[in-house]
Structures are given as C-alpha cells and as structure tokens.
Length: 272
Image 1: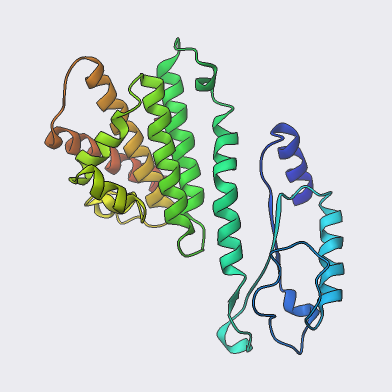
Image 2 (image 1 turned 120 degrees about the vertical axis):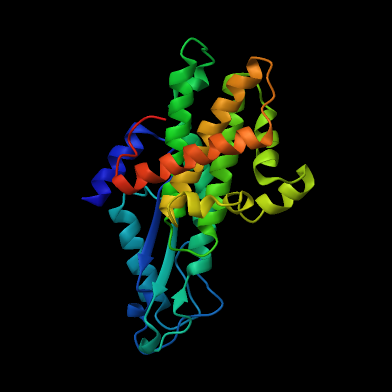
C-alpha cells in the first residue's frame, strides 16, 4: 500500500518529508459551501462551520492510519466548474505553500546521501555526475507539479542549489553565478531579478532547443544541460582558461538538445 511504501521510505531516510493531501472535504458538508477563509492551516479539531466536527474526525482517522508519518496535512478540493463549488481549486494555495516549504528539506535529504558530502575528492567525476543527475530528476518532479507557480519556484531553487554544490565540488564556489550571467546575457543585478521568477526563462532559446518540451521535461532538460555546461566550464577554468559567451552558449545548446532527446526517448537514467 501507499502507507507501507511511505513507511519504508521514512525508515531508509528518517528526515524525508511526507506531505499528505486529503481530497473532497466537501463530502463532510454536502449541502453547504466551502468554509472561507480557508480554516485548515491548523490541525484538527476544527469548529465554526457546517460539518466541522465530522471533518475533524475523518482527518484524525486518516492521520492515525498513516501512523503520524506526514510532516504536513493539507485539505484540497478540486472540482469541475459545473459542480457548483467555489472556488473550484479550494486549498490550492495551502498545497502550493506546503510543497514549497517541504521541497528544500526533500532536496537536502536526497543530496545528503551523495558521496560529495563526505569531503573526499578522489572520485570527483562520479560525484559531479550524481549531483547533476539527481538534480535533474528532482527538477522534473517539481516541474511536473500541476500547481501554478510551484514548478517555477521549485525548479529554480533546485538549479541554484545544484550550481552551488557543483562549484563546491570543483573548488570554484562563485563561478555558478558567473555562468548564469553569461548564459542569460545580463548583469548580476538583472539576473537576481529574473531568477526570482524563473531561472529557466532567464536563458533564451531553452524551449526550442529542448524540442518543445514543457513542464517536467523542460525542467529535466534545462537542469541537466545547465549542470553539464557548468561542469565543462569548471574544467576549463581550472586549466586557467576563460571561455567566451559564444563558446559557452554553443556547449550549453548541445547539452540541452541532448538532454531533451534523452527525456523524449525515456533514457534519462543515463549518467550525465
């Protein structure tokens, strides 16, 4: 069952966050309306609206079934327009907030299992490949979230963390920001303003070179290409070379095209 899988995951990684989204709360108040403002940010019991006691009991039963594994419980109710429930995406904001708050914890837990945290430098190529591949897979997961805004914020955070970790691994902790400035063709100040919205959108032509991918596919391809381009850039920098923008863009485009092909053909498990 899903609960058993969650238990195994938690046993393997005790700090791995679990988010439980409970759907259809309107079944507890079938002839009423959604309580507004959204009252479920706190744990039950709830009061003050029709069906509060019934809904509180149901959520407490589910929590007990999950053996208190979830770090966060969110109630959502996504209904078709014609069903008469308003808003049709009830709880969307709470779900998005919970995901964005738990995502850094999940990302850190995943990367904590990688060899690079040990500080050993004897196997740098393997560590770098693992950072890039794991980051691309996490970005794909975040990019596939059907929640407006959550995908962009999550992917951007994962990509920035990947550049930081790669820079640390290569001994060039400040060069990731410089590479982004070159790829985006902007100054540091403009880059900071743009990454607040979406790192993917900072770099021109990304969508077209990735084969028209969107969502999870674009998140995977752009993250993998960025990691591979930065790895190549770091190798050149350690040789005392300073690649110009044209050379960097050429390599990034090649990596992006290949990453898009891997996604479309289902061979993303191949190491970077």
